[in-house]
Image (tube, rainbow, N blue to C red; front, side, top):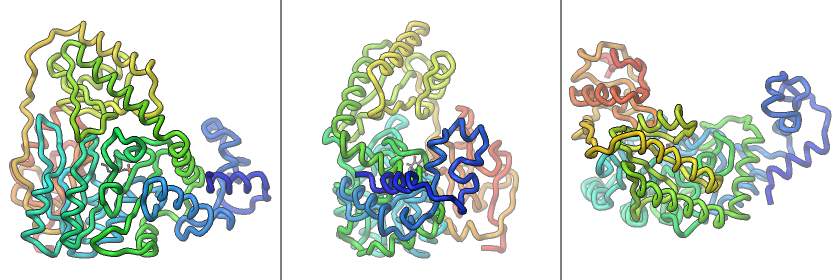
Length: 475
Ligand SMILES: Cc1ncc(COP(=O)(O)O)c(C=O)c1O
């Protein structure tokens, strides 16, 4: 059953004469370059907001049916389709939950989309650091969450990312119990976990673990087109919500003209998981385990496995060959035409999904064997990567900072001033400095040292000669 796809197919077959959007009129007037990409058949499926195709902002027929099927497969009470990526789903759940000056526990390794959510809602973040081991961000400690609640009874929500990009999950069962005991809700950025539900050999999904909301990137790991995600909701504990409130929040940030091919791809991705999800993901897990086993036999390469890891995320560490993860990524890309998901100074990350084959895994292994043969194994290189010892002091909420007057000044002059901008390295897009936080010598040194590893800095001035600060007198 694929309600959106079925409704589109009926409409296309009926083929009414088009005096409506899109301007290319289902491909008739499209440029050849677009036709080359999307084909005549694909463009004819670029339908518009016709009555029989429902309305994403107020779904009642085919979109609602598809969302209900998605909620059912994930064990949620409701699902909301997003064509604004997981960013859209995250900001929707934050807008549904938080208002100005509400206090919210936020994992410091949250994705930048959460900064956007904080600016939109005006909520005041109380940050919590993940534990870090050998450059790897681990889960959030439930005891630390509890101790924040003990000293502050007004917290409305907890927002965490689980799994992390590198596949580490937090103990969400414990954390959800704590949050609910204190009358708070648990919002999970599950951008990297849309597949967890489909095998019991994977960590439990957020919704199964007691989260109220999960923003999940169907496009990252399942088969929907890039840009499409789902917001899942379960009425569990903490504050009560109804579907209308969440829809209202989602409508604030979502287009009124969703592309139906994108929407249908969400529907079809869910159907694919319904038909074959468990078989496909169990195969991906087998392939990942095989990859890990074989990597451990190649001299100079290391990988890891742990109980709280999603095993389909395979991190490869080549430090014993004198290579950073970033250098390993580059060698694989340019010498072997193999592209990983991302890398950091410590390791490179490979995502294994239901689409991978034994042949592809063998090609990767052969490339690693070849790199190992061409290099000398040394004592593990341990990079002097600076660690931020403490979270910067928050002077203004992200929203207050966003709406304050700002100006650019040189980095040297900025110490002790309030940042007006968010700064992160992309990937992974985790903010180092939030708008409203105090700029310190430690932060500046950290950013400069990280830049030496050739990671892309996302800041108003990506060369990091200047930074935007809040103008005095405007606070
Ligand atoms: C942890 C995390 N959350 C949210 C997002 C945002 O997802 P999207 O790009 O679909 O908006 C990303 C994207 O990389 C991410 O890594």
